[in-house]
Amino acid sequence: MTPQDLVMRMLPPFGGWLALAALALPGGSPLRGAAVAVFLAAGPGAALVGLWGPALRARPARGPVETRRPGFARRSDQLERLMLAVLLSVAAVMVVATVLIATHAFSAQRVLLTLTLLTTLAAFCPRLRASPPTPRTRKGSAL
Image 1: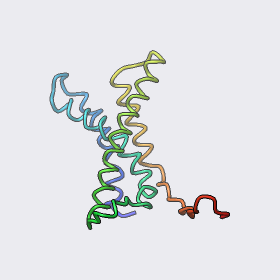
Image 2: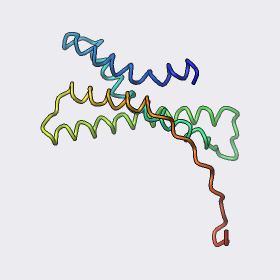
Image 3: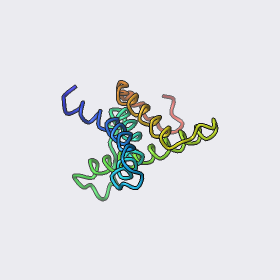
Image 4: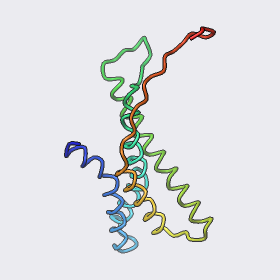
């Protein structure tokens, strides 16, 4: 693992710990709100997308046959990972908040702490490898 890979891997958990540290700022501080909002919007999802990164990169996007642009696959894959990170983050926030509400232990600090711990755990997990592609068969063939 290169130092650049390590920095990219540890960026989401660092954002979570920074958001937790920002809770020490006064309640109406824009810096506090920005740190927490940015982490909740992208942190947990970015750690999960990083965990699944090699498996996602194994099968690049394919564009329409008529418009083969040279940078289509790279930009499409980047947009896919960005949207996946945001949507996974929102889903993680909703699941953690729902569990804490159901257990009568809900507070914003607990949600943030739980997500930061889960993000840190996901950053330390080994990356998932891509499985080999399965051979495609024609419908009705014997293979």
